[in-house]
Image (cartoon, rainbow, N blue to C red; front, top):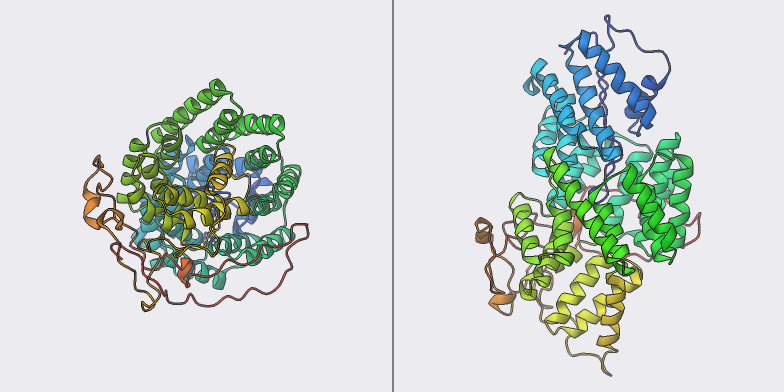
Amino acid sequence: MKSETLKNAAVSTLVGATLVTGVIVLAPGWGKDAPPPAPGPVARAMTAAGSGAPASLSDLDALIRDRERFVRDHPGDEESWAVLGSAYVERGTRLGDTAYYPKAERALKRSLKAVPAAKGNVDALVGMAELANARHDFAGARGYAESARKQKPERWAVYPALIDAYNGLGRYTAAGKAMDKLLELQTGPQVQGREARVYWNKGWREDAAALAYGATANSRTPTEKAVSLHREAELAWERGEAEEAVELYTDALKTAPEHHRSLAGRARALAALGRTDEALDDYRSALAKLPLPEYALEAGELYESLGLNGDAATLYELLHKQVTRAGEHGVDGDLVLARYEADHGDPAAAVRRLQGEWRRGHRSVHVADTMGWALYRAGRPEDALPFAKLATGQGLRSALFSYHLGEIERALGDFGPARRHIDEALRTNPHFSPLLAPKAREAQDALGEPAMGGPADVEGDGYWPLDPPADAPSGTPSPSPSASASAPSSSAVASPEPAASSSAPLPASPSDASVPGAFGGAAVSPAPAPPAARPAPQLRPVQRSTTPAPTTVAPGNG
C-alpha cells in the first residue's frame, strides 16, 4: 500500500438473525493526490466508521459519490476501492437493495487486483468477508476473515466479520473467542451492543439488557442511538414485553426516521397487542422501504391469522420474488424459503433446502430449529427431535424454538416434556407468532395439567444429544433408545434427497464440539428476566473472562 496513505481501516457490524446494521471498511486514500476532506458528510461517515458506528444514509451516500469520483481519476488506489466496495455493502444492506452487492464485489476485487491479499490488503479482505456475510455465505466469510486475522491479528475491525461468520456456521465456541478478542481491542456502544446479543444468546437476560441499555446511553449520533434503541426493542420483544418494545421502536424511528427495520419490529409488537391496523400499516411501510423476504413472510402470516388469505397469498408471492431477485445478486435465501415451505408449502421441499444449508456448513440454531420443524411437518418427528433439541440447547430463550420442540415431543407421545416446553414458549412470549401462538395455547389446553405426583420421567426417553444419563460422566451423551430416534449420522450428508420413511438419512449434526454450552461456556440455567420499566436494567459490571473449555459434547463430526 502507498506509504503516504492512512492505514486506519475500520469496520462495524451488528447482526441479529440474519440482520446487519453497519458494514463499512475505511482505509481512506487521502494522500498527496487527495488532501483530507473538510468537515462534512464524507468526514462524518469516516469518523463514524473509525469508531465502529453506523453512518447516516445521507453521509454514506456522500462517501460513495466521493470515492466513485476519486477512483475514476486514481484507478490503482486499492484503499479507495476497498472503501467504495464496503460502502456499497453497507448501503445495500441498509436499504435491502441487493443490487449493490455485485457492485461491491467488483470494487473489492479491483482493490485486490491492485494489491493482492498476500501483500497485506486486509481492508479488502474484511470487505469481502462482510459481503459474504450479507449474502449468507458464511463459509466464504470465515475464509476471508480468517485470512485477514492471520495477517493482522490486532486489527479490531476483523473480528465483527469473523463473529458473524462463525455464528452463521453454528460455531459458537469460536464466535465466543473472537468476541473476547474484540473486547480486548475495542470499546464503544457498538461493541457493547454486540456483546449484549452474545449474552442474550447465552440466556443471560439481565446482563444482555444492561449492556443494551448502556449502549443506548453511550451512543453519540442519532443513527447510532437508533441502532441501539432498536436492539433494546428486539430484546424486549423476545422476552414478551410488547408494550415496551413498541415504545423503543418508536423512539428509534423518532431518533432516525431512516431506521426502517424498526418499522417491521414495531409492526410485530403492535400485532401482539391487537393493534392490527397499525401493524399492517407499519408492515406496508417497512416493505416499501426495506423489501426483505422475512418481512413479507411475517406480514403474510399476520394477514393469514386475520382470515385474509388472499392478501397473505400476495405477500407470499412477493417473498418468492424477493428471494429470486436477491439470488440473482448472490444472496442465499434458502433459510427463509424453508421457513415458508415448512408452514405454508411443501415441508419435504423445506427439508431438501435445509439439507443443502447443512452441507454448506450452515449449522446455526436457526437452521437446526427450522430443520426440526420441517421434518416434523413432513411427518418425521423422530428425525426432527435431535435438531429441535440442538436448537433449544444453546441457552437462547426463544418462544418459537420451545414451541417447535414441544409439538415434536407431543407427536412422539412425550407429554411431560411437551407440556413443559409449550408452557415455556408461552411464558417467554405469549404472542410470539400470530399463527402459532394460538396453536400453542390450544396444545397447552389439550395437554392439560400433569397427573398428581408428577410423571415418572419428566424428561422423556432421554433422546441424544442433550439428555445424558444421570450417572454418566460429564460430556458423555446418552445413546438413543432406538434407531429411529438416533441422531443423524455424518454419512447422510452426501444424500441430497430424503427418503420417504421416518428413518431417512439426515445431514450430520454440527461439528462444533461445545454447542450445549454456547460461546465456549458450559450450559447454564436461564437468568431471571429484567424488570419491565425503563430504565429497567441496572448497570453493573459484567465479568468477562477467557472463554472456558466446553463441558459437553455435541453429536456428529466434532
